[in-house]
Length: 491
Image (cartoon, rainbow, N blue to C red):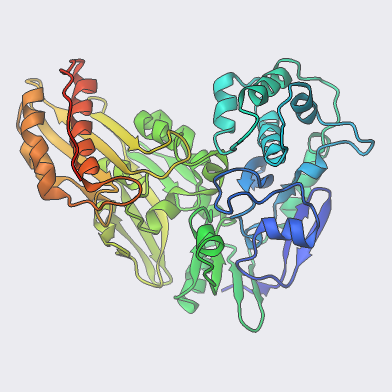
Protein backbone atom coordinates (compact mmCIF):
# COMPACT_ATOMS: atom_id res chain seq x y z
CA UNK A 1 0.00 0.00 0.00
CA UNK A 2 1.25 3.51 -0.75
CA UNK A 3 2.08 5.97 1.97
CA UNK A 4 -0.93 7.25 3.85
CA UNK A 5 -2.05 10.84 4.12
CA UNK A 6 -4.21 12.01 6.97
CA UNK A 7 -6.73 14.59 5.80
CA UNK A 8 -9.66 15.02 3.43
CA UNK A 9 -9.61 18.17 1.32
CA UNK A 10 -12.48 19.68 -0.64
CA UNK A 11 -14.01 23.04 -1.50
CA UNK A 12 -17.24 24.16 0.17
CA UNK A 13 -18.77 26.99 -1.84
CA UNK A 14 -15.80 29.41 -1.97
CA UNK A 15 -13.69 28.01 0.88
CA UNK A 16 -11.17 25.19 0.99
CA UNK A 17 -11.80 22.62 3.71
CA UNK A 18 -9.32 20.20 5.27
CA UNK A 19 -10.49 17.58 7.77
CA UNK A 20 -8.01 15.44 9.69
CA UNK A 21 -10.59 14.13 12.14
CA UNK A 22 -13.81 12.60 10.84
CA UNK A 23 -16.17 9.76 11.69
CA UNK A 24 -16.64 7.37 8.75
CA UNK A 25 -20.43 7.67 8.94
CA UNK A 26 -20.61 11.47 9.31
CA UNK A 27 -23.05 12.76 6.68
CA UNK A 28 -22.62 15.81 4.51
CA UNK A 29 -25.99 17.10 5.75
CA UNK A 30 -24.84 17.11 9.38
CA UNK A 31 -21.54 18.71 8.42
CA UNK A 32 -23.31 21.52 6.59
CA UNK A 33 -25.96 22.21 9.20
CA UNK A 34 -24.16 21.49 12.47
CA UNK A 35 -20.54 22.31 11.66
CA UNK A 36 -20.95 25.12 9.13
CA UNK A 37 -24.43 26.44 9.98
CA UNK A 38 -25.49 26.28 6.33
CA UNK A 39 -29.09 25.54 7.20
CA UNK A 40 -30.62 26.09 3.76
CA UNK A 41 -29.98 22.38 3.21
CA UNK A 42 -32.89 20.61 4.96
CA UNK A 43 -33.46 17.16 6.39
CA UNK A 44 -36.79 15.77 5.24
CA UNK A 45 -36.64 12.01 4.92
CA UNK A 46 -33.01 11.09 5.77
CA UNK A 47 -33.12 8.38 3.09
CA UNK A 48 -32.49 10.14 -0.22
CA UNK A 49 -36.15 10.25 -1.18
CA UNK A 50 -37.52 13.79 -0.80
CA UNK A 51 -34.72 16.00 -2.16
CA UNK A 52 -34.93 18.69 0.54
CA UNK A 53 -31.23 18.14 1.25
CA UNK A 54 -30.10 18.51 -2.36
CA UNK A 55 -26.72 20.12 -2.97
CA UNK A 56 -24.37 20.00 -5.94
CA UNK A 57 -21.07 18.16 -5.87
CA UNK A 58 -18.53 18.95 -8.55
CA UNK A 59 -16.08 16.16 -9.36
CA UNK A 60 -13.36 15.66 -11.91
CA UNK A 61 -14.19 13.30 -14.76
CA UNK A 62 -10.87 13.09 -16.55
CA UNK A 63 -9.97 16.74 -17.05
CA UNK A 64 -13.59 17.92 -16.99
CA UNK A 65 -15.39 19.31 -13.95
CA UNK A 66 -18.88 17.83 -13.69
CA UNK A 67 -21.51 19.09 -11.24
CA UNK A 68 -24.24 16.71 -10.07
CA UNK A 69 -27.14 16.98 -7.66
CA UNK A 70 -26.79 14.66 -4.65
CA UNK A 71 -28.66 13.87 -1.44
CA UNK A 72 -26.62 15.33 1.41
CA UNK A 73 -28.58 13.27 3.96
CA UNK A 74 -27.02 9.98 2.80
CA UNK A 75 -23.78 11.29 1.29
CA UNK A 76 -20.88 10.67 3.67
CA UNK A 77 -18.43 13.53 4.19
CA UNK A 78 -15.59 11.02 3.82
CA UNK A 79 -16.50 10.60 0.14
CA UNK A 80 -15.87 14.26 -0.72
CA UNK A 81 -12.11 14.36 -1.20
CA UNK A 82 -11.15 16.50 -4.22
CA UNK A 83 -14.71 17.72 -4.86
CA UNK A 84 -16.55 21.05 -4.86
CA UNK A 85 -19.67 21.16 -2.70
CA UNK A 86 -22.16 23.90 -3.59
CA UNK A 87 -25.10 24.80 -1.33
CA UNK A 88 -28.06 27.12 -1.88
CA UNK A 89 -26.38 29.86 0.17
CA UNK A 90 -23.77 30.24 -2.60
CA UNK A 91 -26.15 31.07 -5.45
CA UNK A 92 -27.05 34.70 -4.84
CA UNK A 93 -24.55 37.50 -5.48
CA UNK A 94 -22.82 39.30 -2.62
CA UNK A 95 -25.15 42.28 -3.08
CA UNK A 96 -28.19 40.03 -2.62
CA UNK A 97 -29.25 39.77 -6.28
CA UNK A 98 -30.80 36.37 -6.76
CA UNK A 99 -29.58 33.86 -9.30
CA UNK A 100 -32.00 33.58 -12.29
CA UNK A 101 -33.12 30.16 -11.05
CA UNK A 102 -33.99 31.60 -7.66
CA UNK A 103 -35.68 34.66 -9.17
CA UNK A 104 -37.82 32.49 -11.45
CA UNK A 105 -39.06 30.52 -8.43
CA UNK A 106 -40.18 33.85 -6.94
CA UNK A 107 -41.72 35.18 -10.14
CA UNK A 108 -43.70 32.02 -10.88
CA UNK A 109 -44.78 31.34 -7.28
CA UNK A 110 -42.83 28.09 -7.06
CA UNK A 111 -42.67 28.13 -3.26
CA UNK A 112 -45.32 27.95 -0.55
CA UNK A 113 -44.17 26.65 2.84
CA UNK A 114 -40.60 26.86 1.51
CA UNK A 115 -39.18 23.75 3.19
CA UNK A 116 -38.52 21.91 -0.06
CA UNK A 117 -37.60 25.03 -2.05
CA UNK A 118 -33.79 25.01 -1.55
CA UNK A 119 -33.67 21.43 -2.83
CA UNK A 120 -35.70 22.31 -5.91
CA UNK A 121 -33.50 25.34 -6.56
CA UNK A 122 -30.33 23.25 -6.36
CA UNK A 123 -31.71 20.58 -8.70
CA UNK A 124 -32.71 23.25 -11.22
CA UNK A 125 -29.34 24.95 -10.81
CA UNK A 126 -27.68 21.65 -11.70
CA UNK A 127 -29.81 21.58 -14.85
CA UNK A 128 -28.84 25.21 -15.55
CA UNK A 129 -25.16 24.22 -15.49
CA UNK A 130 -25.51 21.11 -17.65
CA UNK A 131 -28.19 21.94 -20.22
CA UNK A 132 -28.54 25.26 -22.06
CA UNK A 133 -31.91 24.41 -23.58
CA UNK A 134 -33.84 21.83 -21.54
CA UNK A 135 -37.30 20.71 -22.59
CA UNK A 136 -40.14 19.81 -20.27
CA UNK A 137 -39.06 16.15 -20.22
CA UNK A 138 -35.56 17.19 -19.11
CA UNK A 139 -37.02 19.35 -16.36
CA UNK A 140 -39.34 16.62 -15.12
CA UNK A 141 -36.47 14.12 -15.08
CA UNK A 142 -34.32 16.57 -13.13
CA UNK A 143 -37.07 16.96 -10.52
CA UNK A 144 -37.87 13.26 -10.09
CA UNK A 145 -35.99 13.24 -6.79
CA UNK A 146 -37.63 16.36 -5.32
CA UNK A 147 -40.97 16.11 -3.53
CA UNK A 148 -43.32 19.03 -2.84
CA UNK A 149 -46.28 18.54 -0.53
CA UNK A 150 -48.09 21.87 -0.81
CA UNK A 151 -47.33 24.01 -3.88
CA UNK A 152 -47.64 21.41 -6.61
CA UNK A 153 -45.16 21.00 -9.40
CA UNK A 154 -46.61 23.11 -12.21
CA UNK A 155 -45.38 26.51 -10.89
CA UNK A 156 -41.92 25.02 -10.38
CA UNK A 157 -41.86 23.60 -13.90
CA UNK A 158 -43.04 26.94 -15.30
CA UNK A 159 -40.17 28.65 -13.45
CA UNK A 160 -37.69 26.19 -14.97
CA UNK A 161 -39.14 26.70 -18.45
CA UNK A 162 -38.94 30.48 -18.08
CA UNK A 163 -35.27 30.32 -17.09
CA UNK A 164 -34.54 28.06 -20.07
CA UNK A 165 -36.33 30.36 -22.53
CA UNK A 166 -34.84 33.64 -21.32
CA UNK A 167 -31.40 32.53 -20.23
CA UNK A 168 -29.50 35.82 -19.76
CA UNK A 169 -26.02 36.04 -21.25
CA UNK A 170 -24.62 38.37 -18.60
CA UNK A 171 -25.55 37.14 -15.14
CA UNK A 172 -23.78 36.51 -11.89
CA UNK A 173 -23.09 32.81 -11.46
CA UNK A 174 -20.99 31.45 -8.60
CA UNK A 175 -19.44 28.69 -10.71
CA UNK A 176 -19.16 29.68 -14.36
CA UNK A 177 -16.53 32.40 -13.94
CA UNK A 178 -14.36 30.37 -11.56
CA UNK A 179 -14.75 26.95 -13.14
CA UNK A 180 -11.17 26.83 -14.44
CA UNK A 181 -9.85 27.91 -11.05
CA UNK A 182 -11.91 25.29 -9.23
CA UNK A 183 -10.76 22.62 -11.68
CA UNK A 184 -7.11 23.45 -11.03
CA UNK A 185 -7.62 23.33 -7.27
CA UNK A 186 -9.37 19.96 -7.40
CA UNK A 187 -6.60 18.52 -9.57
CA UNK A 188 -4.11 19.62 -6.94
CA UNK A 189 -6.19 17.91 -4.24
CA UNK A 190 -6.27 14.59 -6.08
CA UNK A 191 -3.66 12.10 -4.98
CA UNK A 192 -2.75 8.49 -5.56
CA UNK A 193 -1.85 8.21 -1.90
CA UNK A 194 -4.18 6.35 0.41
CA UNK A 195 -5.89 8.63 2.91
CA UNK A 196 -6.43 7.11 6.34
CA UNK A 197 -8.08 8.92 9.23
CA UNK A 198 -8.21 7.00 12.49
CA UNK A 199 -9.07 7.77 16.06
CA UNK A 200 -9.60 5.54 19.08
CA UNK A 201 -12.68 3.75 17.79
CA UNK A 202 -13.07 4.35 14.03
CA UNK A 203 -11.12 4.23 10.79
CA UNK A 204 -11.86 5.86 7.45
CA UNK A 205 -9.81 4.87 4.42
CA UNK A 206 -9.74 6.33 0.89
CA UNK A 207 -7.53 4.26 -1.43
CA UNK A 208 -5.95 6.12 -4.34
CA UNK A 209 -6.04 3.21 -6.78
CA UNK A 210 -7.60 -0.20 -7.39
CA UNK A 211 -4.37 -1.85 -6.32
CA UNK A 212 -4.39 0.12 -3.08
CA UNK A 213 -8.03 -0.89 -2.56
CA UNK A 214 -7.09 -4.56 -2.90
CA UNK A 215 -4.27 -4.13 -0.37
CA UNK A 216 -6.53 -2.20 2.00
CA UNK A 217 -9.23 -4.86 1.86
CA UNK A 218 -6.64 -7.57 2.52
CA UNK A 219 -5.65 -5.70 5.67
CA UNK A 220 -9.26 -4.91 6.66
CA UNK A 221 -11.42 -7.81 5.33
CA UNK A 222 -14.40 -6.83 7.50
CA UNK A 223 -14.48 -3.24 6.23
CA UNK A 224 -17.58 -1.79 4.58
CA UNK A 225 -16.91 -0.61 1.02
CA UNK A 226 -18.89 2.51 0.09
CA UNK A 227 -19.29 3.72 -3.49
CA UNK A 228 -22.44 5.82 -3.83
CA UNK A 229 -23.94 5.22 -0.34
CA UNK A 230 -27.52 5.20 -1.68
CA UNK A 231 -28.02 1.93 0.19
CA UNK A 232 -25.33 2.05 2.87
CA UNK A 233 -26.40 5.57 3.81
CA UNK A 234 -29.73 4.18 5.04
CA UNK A 235 -27.91 1.64 7.20
CA UNK A 236 -26.70 4.66 9.15
CA UNK A 237 -29.64 7.09 9.01
CA UNK A 238 -32.42 4.51 9.48
CA UNK A 239 -30.82 1.48 11.13
CA UNK A 240 -28.32 3.50 13.19
CA UNK A 241 -25.54 1.05 12.34
CA UNK A 242 -22.02 1.94 13.38
CA UNK A 243 -19.85 1.04 10.40
CA UNK A 244 -16.15 0.62 11.04
CA UNK A 245 -13.83 0.61 9.23
CA UNK A 246 -15.19 2.20 6.05
CA UNK A 247 -13.46 2.28 2.67
CA UNK A 248 -14.60 4.95 0.20
CA UNK A 249 -13.95 4.07 -3.45
CA UNK A 250 -15.76 6.80 -5.42
CA UNK A 251 -12.48 8.60 -6.16
CA UNK A 252 -10.68 5.66 -7.80
CA UNK A 253 -10.30 6.52 -11.50
CA UNK A 254 -9.84 2.91 -12.65
CA UNK A 255 -13.31 2.04 -11.35
CA UNK A 256 -14.91 4.93 -13.27
CA UNK A 257 -14.21 3.60 -16.76
CA UNK A 258 -16.72 2.68 -19.45
CA UNK A 259 -15.16 0.72 -22.32
CA UNK A 260 -17.02 -0.05 -25.53
CA UNK A 261 -15.69 -3.05 -27.43
CA UNK A 262 -16.82 -5.18 -30.36
CA UNK A 263 -18.02 -7.80 -27.90
CA UNK A 264 -19.89 -5.62 -25.45
CA UNK A 265 -19.70 -3.01 -22.74
CA UNK A 266 -17.36 -3.01 -19.73
CA UNK A 267 -18.48 -0.86 -16.81
CA UNK A 268 -16.27 -0.11 -13.82
CA UNK A 269 -17.74 -0.75 -10.40
CA UNK A 270 -17.61 2.94 -9.52
CA UNK A 271 -19.61 4.16 -12.54
CA UNK A 272 -22.85 5.83 -11.50
CA UNK A 273 -26.22 5.18 -13.10
CA UNK A 274 -26.13 8.66 -14.64
CA UNK A 275 -22.66 8.16 -16.08
CA UNK A 276 -23.60 4.76 -17.55
CA UNK A 277 -27.00 5.85 -18.88
CA UNK A 278 -25.92 7.02 -22.34
CA UNK A 279 -23.74 4.00 -23.12
CA UNK A 280 -26.32 1.51 -21.84
CA UNK A 281 -29.21 3.22 -23.63
CA UNK A 282 -27.35 3.13 -26.94
CA UNK A 283 -26.78 -0.65 -26.83
CA UNK A 284 -29.66 -1.88 -24.67
CA UNK A 285 -32.48 0.72 -24.95
CA UNK A 286 -34.91 -1.12 -22.67
CA UNK A 287 -32.29 -1.22 -19.92
CA UNK A 288 -31.72 2.51 -20.31
CA UNK A 289 -35.43 3.26 -19.96
CA UNK A 290 -35.50 1.32 -16.71
CA UNK A 291 -32.52 3.28 -15.32
CA UNK A 292 -34.55 6.46 -15.88
CA UNK A 293 -36.99 5.14 -13.26
CA UNK A 294 -34.35 4.05 -10.77
CA UNK A 295 -34.55 6.51 -7.88
CA UNK A 296 -34.42 10.24 -8.54
CA UNK A 297 -31.71 12.19 -10.33
CA UNK A 298 -29.75 12.58 -7.08
CA UNK A 299 -29.76 8.83 -6.46
CA UNK A 300 -28.73 8.09 -10.04
CA UNK A 301 -25.86 10.57 -9.71
CA UNK A 302 -24.59 8.84 -6.56
CA UNK A 303 -25.56 5.18 -6.91
CA UNK A 304 -23.47 2.75 -8.92
CA UNK A 305 -24.29 -0.34 -10.94
CA UNK A 306 -21.36 -2.10 -9.28
CA UNK A 307 -22.78 -1.32 -5.85
CA UNK A 308 -26.25 -2.50 -6.87
CA UNK A 309 -24.70 -5.82 -7.85
CA UNK A 310 -22.26 -6.10 -4.95
CA UNK A 311 -24.81 -5.77 -2.17
CA UNK A 312 -26.82 -8.71 -3.51
CA UNK A 313 -30.24 -7.27 -2.73
CA UNK A 314 -33.09 -9.43 -4.09
CA UNK A 315 -34.89 -6.25 -5.20
CA UNK A 316 -31.95 -4.54 -6.90
CA UNK A 317 -33.15 -3.32 -10.31
CA UNK A 318 -30.02 -3.83 -12.41
CA UNK A 319 -29.34 -7.58 -11.82
CA UNK A 320 -32.43 -8.89 -13.72
CA UNK A 321 -31.59 -7.13 -17.03
CA UNK A 322 -27.89 -7.87 -16.56
CA UNK A 323 -28.61 -11.57 -16.02
CA UNK A 324 -30.95 -11.67 -19.02
CA UNK A 325 -28.18 -10.11 -21.12
CA UNK A 326 -25.67 -12.72 -19.94
CA UNK A 327 -23.46 -10.29 -17.99
CA UNK A 328 -20.46 -11.35 -15.93
CA UNK A 329 -18.81 -9.75 -12.89
CA UNK A 330 -15.08 -9.42 -12.27
CA UNK A 331 -13.91 -9.76 -8.67
CA UNK A 332 -10.49 -8.57 -7.53
CA UNK A 333 -8.31 -9.11 -4.49
CA UNK A 334 -4.66 -8.65 -3.61
CA UNK A 335 -3.98 -12.11 -5.06
CA UNK A 336 -5.61 -11.55 -8.46
CA UNK A 337 -8.85 -11.42 -10.41
CA UNK A 338 -11.60 -13.84 -11.32
CA UNK A 339 -14.72 -13.49 -13.46
CA UNK A 340 -18.02 -15.29 -12.85
CA UNK A 341 -21.39 -15.23 -14.62
CA UNK A 342 -23.56 -12.73 -12.79
CA UNK A 343 -26.37 -15.25 -12.27
CA UNK A 344 -23.91 -17.46 -10.34
CA UNK A 345 -22.70 -14.57 -8.18
CA UNK A 346 -25.97 -14.58 -6.22
CA UNK A 347 -26.05 -17.70 -4.03
CA UNK A 348 -28.82 -17.12 -1.50
CA UNK A 349 -30.32 -14.28 0.46
CA UNK A 350 -27.49 -12.25 2.02
CA UNK A 351 -24.80 -14.44 0.48
CA UNK A 352 -22.82 -13.82 -2.71
CA UNK A 353 -19.87 -15.55 -4.34
CA UNK A 354 -17.43 -12.94 -3.06
CA UNK A 355 -14.72 -13.56 -0.50
CA UNK A 356 -14.07 -11.10 2.31
CA UNK A 357 -10.88 -9.90 0.61
CA UNK A 358 -12.55 -9.39 -2.80
CA UNK A 359 -14.35 -6.43 -4.28
CA UNK A 360 -16.42 -6.01 -7.43
CA UNK A 361 -14.09 -4.43 -9.98
CA UNK A 362 -16.35 -4.30 -13.02
CA UNK A 363 -19.20 -5.75 -15.02
CA UNK A 364 -19.15 -6.91 -18.63
CA UNK A 365 -22.35 -6.89 -20.68
CA UNK A 366 -22.23 -8.81 -23.99
CA UNK A 367 -23.68 -7.21 -27.08
CA UNK A 368 -27.34 -7.87 -27.77
CA UNK A 369 -27.70 -9.44 -31.25
CA UNK A 370 -29.82 -7.29 -33.56
CA UNK A 371 -32.49 -9.96 -34.01
CA UNK A 372 -32.95 -10.67 -30.29
CA UNK A 373 -35.97 -9.27 -28.47
CA UNK A 374 -35.24 -7.73 -25.08
CA UNK A 375 -37.40 -5.91 -22.53
CA UNK A 376 -37.25 -4.83 -18.90
CA UNK A 377 -40.30 -4.14 -16.73
CA UNK A 378 -40.14 -2.42 -13.34
CA UNK A 379 -43.32 -2.75 -11.26
CA UNK A 380 -43.65 -0.34 -8.35
CA UNK A 381 -46.33 1.61 -6.49
CA UNK A 382 -45.01 4.91 -7.82
CA UNK A 383 -43.67 5.20 -11.34
CA UNK A 384 -40.59 7.16 -10.28
CA UNK A 385 -38.31 6.99 -7.27
CA UNK A 386 -39.69 3.80 -5.78
CA UNK A 387 -38.34 0.38 -4.90
CA UNK A 388 -39.70 -2.37 -7.13
CA UNK A 389 -42.32 -4.84 -6.04
CA UNK A 390 -40.79 -6.95 -8.79
CA UNK A 391 -38.60 -6.35 -11.83
CA UNK A 392 -38.56 -8.68 -14.82
CA UNK A 393 -36.21 -8.91 -17.79
CA UNK A 394 -36.95 -10.96 -20.90
CA UNK A 395 -34.80 -11.93 -23.88
CA UNK A 396 -35.59 -14.33 -26.72
CA UNK A 397 -34.09 -15.37 -30.04
CA UNK A 398 -36.40 -16.59 -32.81
CA UNK A 399 -35.53 -18.56 -35.95
CA UNK A 400 -37.02 -18.01 -39.40
CA UNK A 401 -40.00 -20.20 -38.48
CA UNK A 402 -40.78 -18.05 -35.41
CA UNK A 403 -39.56 -20.75 -33.05
CA UNK A 404 -37.77 -19.86 -29.84
CA UNK A 405 -34.13 -20.93 -30.09
CA UNK A 406 -32.89 -19.13 -26.97
CA UNK A 407 -34.59 -17.53 -23.99
CA UNK A 408 -33.43 -15.89 -20.76
CA UNK A 409 -35.89 -14.61 -18.16
CA UNK A 410 -34.74 -13.08 -14.87
CA UNK A 411 -36.60 -11.51 -11.97
CA UNK A 412 -35.90 -9.47 -8.89
CA UNK A 413 -38.34 -9.34 -5.99
CA UNK A 414 -39.52 -12.89 -6.58
CA UNK A 415 -36.98 -14.85 -4.51
CA UNK A 416 -34.17 -14.39 -1.99
CA UNK A 417 -31.84 -13.39 -4.84
CA UNK A 418 -32.19 -12.11 -8.39
CA UNK A 419 -33.01 -15.33 -10.24
CA UNK A 420 -33.68 -16.84 -13.65
CA UNK A 421 -37.03 -18.47 -14.40
CA UNK A 422 -35.45 -21.64 -15.78
CA UNK A 423 -38.61 -23.75 -15.67
CA UNK A 424 -40.47 -21.12 -17.66
CA UNK A 425 -37.56 -20.94 -20.10
CA UNK A 426 -37.65 -24.73 -20.56
CA UNK A 427 -41.39 -24.54 -21.27
CA UNK A 428 -40.75 -21.99 -24.04
CA UNK A 429 -37.62 -23.26 -25.78
CA UNK A 430 -38.26 -24.86 -29.15
CA UNK A 431 -41.88 -23.73 -29.24
CA UNK A 432 -43.53 -21.32 -31.65
CA UNK A 433 -43.62 -17.78 -30.23
CA UNK A 434 -47.39 -17.47 -29.82
CA UNK A 435 -49.98 -16.58 -27.26
CA UNK A 436 -50.82 -20.27 -26.87
CA UNK A 437 -47.18 -21.02 -26.04
CA UNK A 438 -47.07 -18.20 -23.51
CA UNK A 439 -50.31 -19.32 -21.86
CA UNK A 440 -49.05 -22.88 -21.60
CA UNK A 441 -45.74 -21.71 -20.05
CA UNK A 442 -47.23 -19.36 -17.45
CA UNK A 443 -47.98 -22.05 -14.82
CA UNK A 444 -44.27 -22.91 -14.76
CA UNK A 445 -43.66 -19.76 -12.74
CA UNK A 446 -45.04 -21.65 -9.72
CA UNK A 447 -42.06 -24.03 -9.90
CA UNK A 448 -39.49 -21.26 -10.24
CA UNK A 449 -40.63 -18.83 -7.57
CA UNK A 450 -42.28 -18.83 -4.15
CA UNK A 451 -42.31 -15.06 -3.49
CA UNK A 452 -42.97 -13.46 -0.14
CA UNK A 453 -45.84 -11.22 0.86
CA UNK A 454 -44.70 -7.86 2.20
CA UNK A 455 -45.87 -4.24 2.21
CA UNK A 456 -44.86 -3.79 -1.43
CA UNK A 457 -46.96 -6.65 -2.80
CA UNK A 458 -48.54 -9.97 -1.95
CA UNK A 459 -47.10 -13.25 -3.16
CA UNK A 460 -50.21 -13.81 -5.29
CA UNK A 461 -49.83 -10.39 -6.92
CA UNK A 462 -46.17 -11.04 -7.70
CA UNK A 463 -46.85 -14.39 -9.36
CA UNK A 464 -49.80 -13.04 -11.33
CA UNK A 465 -47.82 -10.01 -12.46
CA UNK A 466 -44.83 -12.12 -13.51
CA UNK A 467 -47.15 -14.24 -15.65
CA UNK A 468 -48.75 -11.14 -17.13
CA UNK A 469 -45.35 -9.65 -17.98
CA UNK A 470 -44.53 -12.69 -20.09
CA UNK A 471 -47.74 -12.08 -22.03
CA UNK A 472 -46.92 -8.38 -22.30
CA UNK A 473 -43.50 -9.25 -23.68
CA UNK A 474 -45.11 -11.48 -26.29
CA UNK A 475 -47.61 -8.81 -27.31
CA UNK A 476 -44.92 -6.15 -27.60
CA UNK A 477 -42.66 -8.35 -29.71
CA UNK A 478 -45.38 -9.72 -31.97
CA UNK A 479 -47.68 -6.73 -32.51
CA UNK A 480 -50.72 -8.79 -31.54
CA UNK A 481 -53.51 -7.76 -29.16
CA UNK A 482 -54.87 -9.92 -26.37
CA UNK A 483 -58.41 -10.26 -25.13
CA UNK A 484 -58.91 -8.42 -21.84
CA UNK A 485 -59.26 -10.98 -19.04
CA UNK A 486 -60.24 -10.11 -15.47
CA UNK A 487 -58.22 -11.93 -12.83
CA UNK A 488 -59.23 -12.36 -9.21
CA UNK A 489 -56.24 -12.15 -6.85
CA UNK A 490 -56.51 -14.00 -3.56
CA UNK A 491 -54.16 -13.57 -0.61
